[in-house]
Length: 349
Image (cartoon, rainbow, N blue to C red):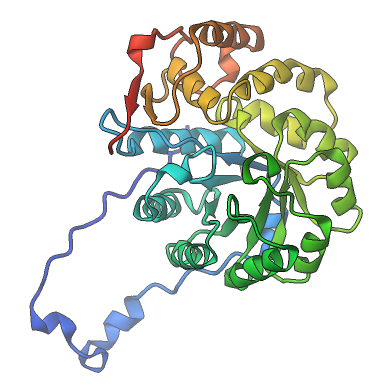
């Protein structure tokens, strides 16, 4: 079996005194010869070719901190399952419940451990242009391959404001724009996307409005990823989408890879639809967090305001696993129904 990427424990650098600040001109030439060249920046065209991107879950320890051991295992499973990219700190990864320090650390950790095996796309969007610019600068500085940007939410802006907002971050590196009106309260109209499509760093759009919008863009040569698991098969094979940015692939990466790579497969799509519907019976990522805990691949720890699905829904998930086949899901343990007392809800972390 191929060796798995593992986290680099790193080294602790201590203060060495004033000598450590010596001018570069006084350092031995061999020090420069041994220095690694900076990594080549990813192009937007490289991102455009990626078909299966997983909006990856962020697991937690009982005290609410990141469980990096479980996280690394999840990423390895995605790589082995055929995912070509991961969204770090997106809605599914609960970036909105992280400090920016946590957020950028997790992006950097993912790049450092897995960046040669999978495309790392950092969610550095914000409803504040200033925050979006700063976070995106930091994300590219720690090596992310592309950025994901949502339109400003709650404090909504005008069409001109949308174009100006995205225009501040697009020059920094490859960018996927995320249109999810159900969360932001505002649709990004085609006129905005078309205005931005001239930027060389515009990789494409994660589109959640539906097939008609997907077709509108693909007819004009704009790269689209479906943002809806239950629509992604038809978006890919009937409406020209490049692929999907998926929640379900956290659970069944191999089957989602088949759905995106192996041609039309109505039977497989139909088989997966009950799982996809179940995942969104409450706002994402509540269903995913519950499912991964019941599969035994993450601890049953929730950062509030998220709380697990009801017992009835938890029982339903185990039945869905049995119907699809446990061998198709991540993890090695049997799916089991967790009790209410098994879950830990954290408000301070």
